[in-house]
Length: 255
Image: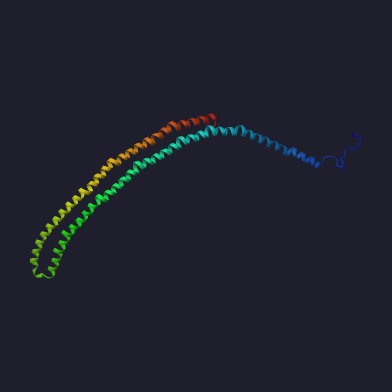
């Protein structure tokens, strides 16, 4: 027991209890630091509770009932049909347009090289030979050479030569007339054997291949692209959009 009459109890080292600086530091900690610490603990607890009971369940709900179904719908109702439609369009283009046009072009090239070009070439060679034989050679040897020789050498006999020239002109006119007639016949045969069959073949190909292929492509496009797209929009996308909007309204995410 302590003696009541004794002075204030001293420590073994002679200090008189806690110092003033320690008391002030504890007061500052209690007044300044402790409220902030308590506020931080409260906010951390509120944050953990908010994450655990609000944010995490909401995220799991949205991931399970909104994002995954929406991704499934986008993949199976939009992406996969569009992928198959693209492949079908490429196949249709290659099968109904590109291959027929390629075959048509190859057929026209073959027709030109093996059917049209040889007759046209021979017609051109024939016309050139006719012009050279019936027009140029007679004009050179029967007109130019005699006239030159007569002018230089046979000036005294120009009158007689004039008569010969009249006769020669008559024969030359007959030759030119026959050459004109022969050229007309050759041109007509060229038209009948080359250009007219080409025109008829082109018109037949256009009526019996190009026009039906175009109509088939238009019908296939309507039945494979336009009709499925219209059905997808009216039967899938619009009902899904309405269900999503109603779900969001029910959850309070849209107003």
